[in-house]
Length: 78
Image (cartoon, rainbow, N blue to C red; front, side, top):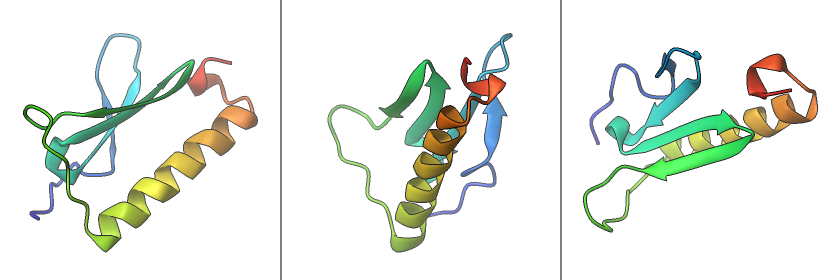
């Protein structure tokens, strides 16, 4: 898999500054809007393959987002 320069980095998607994290060359988008949302952007119902590094990055990101929500960070709707 090619490394996307924005992979795993926060991106601003709309006027409300919702942080959208993209992984797997943009095939996976993750954001928080009340809850944690994960969207697979692959065509049709094709699966997205993650290498070891990407899988670990995804796991770490999800854990961080949950911890941020539990701690009531304002960026996550609290």
